[in-house]
Image 1 (cartoon, rainbow, N blue to C red):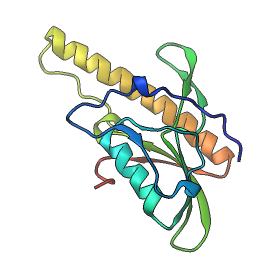
Image 2 (image 1 turned 90 degrees about the vertical axis):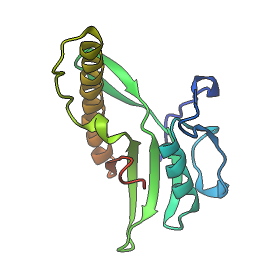
Image 3 (image 1 turned 30 degrees about the horizontal axis):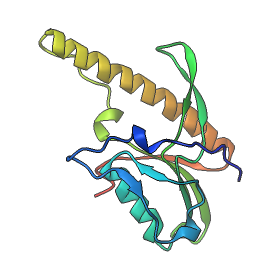
Image 4 (image 1 turned 30 degrees about the vertical axis):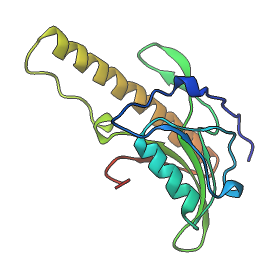
Length: 163
């Protein structure tokens, strides 16, 4: 499989005290098929990197391995999306399967509820959450088709599945 590699700069990663982002250094280098550095934008991504690196059933993996073009209905333009992970693994039935994996907070997967109070801050927060929801939905819809066209499965993992 050939990927359009994405080269992300570490200067765009801004970890704070709440999470352990930054650069991940794999132990099983031969399993990693992406280009370095492996940038984790959250502690959940770091945890998934460790999972991919250390689990025997994961044969190959990459972080932000390729780009997918998607249409954003809010801007009415095509944008570029970099899925979080590509994984090639052996399933429990012994078959080999490929996945495109996205790590998202569960709150990003639900349509936001309109605020009860119409303060400027509440309306601004709602607008941001709503636009993020629409954008994430557009990305997921496109990536699901992209994965299916390549005989892969697109999955979204949340903090609940990464415990």
